[in-house]
Image: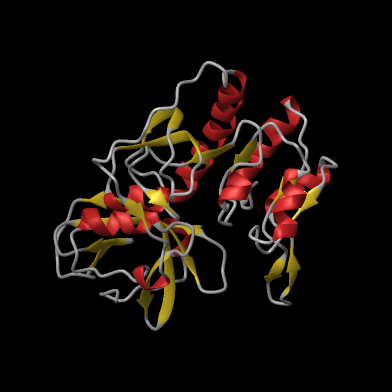
Length: 293
């Protein structure tokens, strides 16, 4: 049970080692300029493997519950599915439902754990294999693995590493399911990774450089932190804290910009209607003003 790119390596790993009764994913939705229905990455992958795919709008109806129960599955693996699983669904598989969560629970329960970890400046992240229950990411943890967050790592970078880690760890969890002892999450240290709001994406150069850098990396590639350059929106995709000082938003040299304290070097950015480009390539034929807003 999964939907986005993050879930695809998990599906591939499971398909290589286990019999999959069905794949559940979000329904196709309008996307792109033509607003044609687009299948989720998980549905596309499942169809390549010849696996049966279901995409109910909700799992709360009696029909949906009956269809799920008739699978008589041993276990359900859930990773970034996007639908709430009601108690009847959670109880249907013989061994319950296992969730692959991209944080070190109980830190960053909720929708955007990777973004929030980077934006907050966490030194590490990881994967938890959790036995699901009715609460939001509150279930006991069966396995966890920790990884350091790199100083220049973006959400996209960490996303890909954690996706591969989750695919490996769920395989280990299923192999050892009889021996694993569920560990209740502590009440101390609970934080919630609220969904990313596009209103968070505009850069405020008066903030300290370390916060601006985290914002850029944490929102890359989506929705993408941005600033205005001569009336044009410039999406900032990669950055690092740099030496230098000046008025907030002042361009010091190249694409190094002064902040409220310190400076940030923009390593990769994207102009409107163009492809992402490294700073040195973007600056060719693109004159920057003295200040960015």
